[in-house]
Amino acid sequence: MIAFEKLVELVASEFKIDPALMMCNTRLMEYVRPRWLAMTIYSEVHSLNYTAKKFGKNSHQTVMHGRQKTRLLCENNPEYLAHAISVMKKVKELSCYPSESIQIDPANTATP
Image (cartoon, rainbow, N blue to C red; front, side):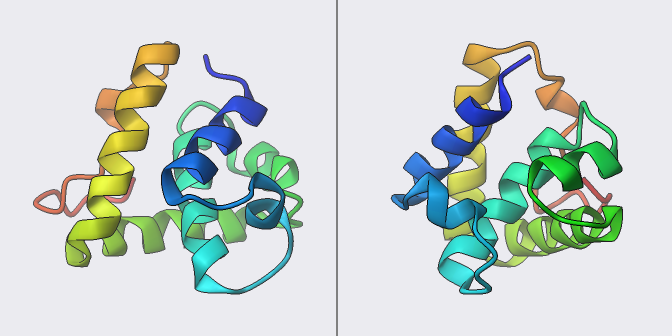
């Protein structure tokens, strides 16, 4: 399993942003979309509540919203999908995350 901090670094690096800005409470899409992807990946092996707390959020609903948005972005935004696939390849190389269970394929309409 990949450490939380390493996951944040991987996602931030993929999107070429500062990890601290990705984790802050800003609502700028430049930082929110990478955060959603990181939440989606992290919540595959941790509870929604635990994931929310790790990301400094108060509710599991924030994580559920991020997962839904990640799925929709992967379905409708080829650039975001490419980033998601790239991150998942790196995560798979570095950990034992069940990456096969994370739905980032736009053809798959199941919630991640």
